[in-house]
Amino acid sequence: MNLKKVKIGLVTSSALLALGACSSKGNDKEAESKEGVTTLTFFNADLQKDDKFDNPVAAEMTKQTGVKLEISHPVGGDEQAIPLMIASGDYPDLIFGKGDINKLIEAGAVIALDELIEEKGDNVKKMYGDQLSRLKNSLDDPYIYHLGTGGVENEAYKTSGTASLQLEVLKELGYPEIKTLEDYEAAIKTYIEKYPEIDGQKTIGLSLLGSDWRWLITVGNPAGFAAGLQDDGQWTVDDKTAETTYKFQLPEVKEYFKWLNHMNDEGLLDPESFTQKGDTYIAKLSSGRVLGIADQDWNFQDATKALKAEGKEWRLYAPLPLTLGEGKVSQSTKNYGFTGTTGVSISSTTKHTDKAFEFLNWMASEDAQILLNWGIEGTNYDVVDGKRVAKPEDLKAAQTDADYTTKTGVGQYVYPFPQWGTSAKDSNGQSISRDTKEQIIDAYTESEKEVLSQYDAEIWPDLFPDPADLGGTKHGRVYEYVLPANSDAAIIQQKADDYTTQAITKAILTKPENFEAEWAKIQKELTAMDIEKANQEMTQLTKDRIKLWESN
Image 1 (tube, rainbow, N blue to C red):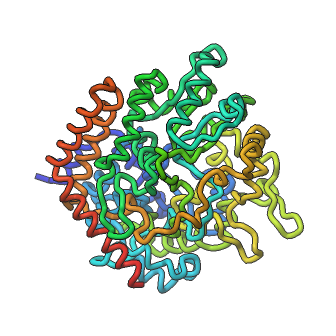
Image 2 (cartoon, rainbow, N blue to C red):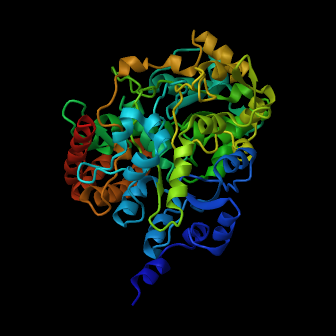
Image 3 (spheres, rainbow, N blue to C red):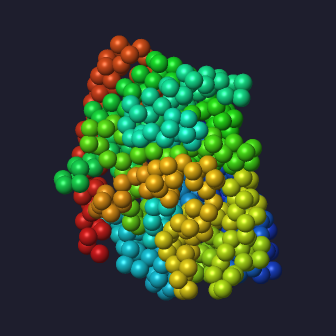
């Protein structure tokens, strides 16, 4: 019996569709190569919208490199695309596997890039500098299998992931100081009492998107942020001992969920928070009737653009340094430095290994970084007195058109490819990123500027702790670790994540008098899953990563 065929039959049809455009084989691509353009198939695990690679920036990329990308992505949030590739042994030329990079490495699906970097990676070596070693896989397997996702030089001009509140609420209440959950709740409750409806629809206090994987970013992650933890995904690390613990065991994380339980009981939590789909969530935010959210800005950017396009600027959201109080400090502006993360890999089955690497090396060049971040001169920006200046009409389109990046290509191909970072400067001393502090301030709406001025701030991060006061990190971020696919930690975490997503949701929605019992049950179940064994293994991985980084 052919085991690969059996495995293929077990995966979803949506994964099959996603893989359809992935194959690195095909006569058409060989023909195109002979005509001077090489088509490289590229699977992007994080892409949610189709990208035909037919925008102006894409055309210029092809002109400069002789490479055209044929891009595919998971369909409908499917997570089986990578397992399907591995089962079939048929891979695209370039793969951004995100958290499944370990599976690809163990399957021999992607190649080590060390020799290519040494031989022809001048731009890569220049971009990463002494941080190149942070791309190494592990102490036991000290090779580089990917490039990209994380900028090498970064500065916090934006903050994301924390709880946010409508500008209109802050204005109506006289711009109060809001730093704790109690402050936040009081603001929402007061506003709803005064305005139970907005534009003829019921006002919603706090809405979450907990029906799919985004439970992690709108429910799980905010719990850690409120507890004053840095973003380590489902884990937390003791900086002194490197002890790594499954976050949902912590009493301070429990307190956040207990607060959500209270918010639900008070009628301040959207009752559809754990059942609504993404499009419903975005539609609610776009209507302007949702006062509070706890989300990453990239996840609700379509709503932001819709609100701006409809002139509802006061219904935009202000990110806040919200914590439990009691000496907890928001870590949202923490500068992690370059942490290696994951990135784009070259498959072991591609017929275009050299071309694929040359493309990635070009992506790390100054010319490429300017193109990817700024777009086309004369179309997206002008050069004035030797400096790039974004065209006002282009900036407006970027702020109001949900399809701006795919239409123009500006910003579309920065992630997950090699990137210099938000604070990197080109050879003329100008920011590589279009999101400079000055540009961000200029792009703020008048309502945002008014609110910021009331808090004596220029940009939203000014409301948060100074990154210099938060310190760095010796281990990076735990959620970026490459876990061996069949390790105890990987298996236990998957079981624990699947369980806690459902069990914590139940605890949030139960009657307040039942919350403690539900939480105790969760802890008992985690113990039964042998979560302590996973904690021990993750602690060792943290120690190994610190050792790997310090040894280079």
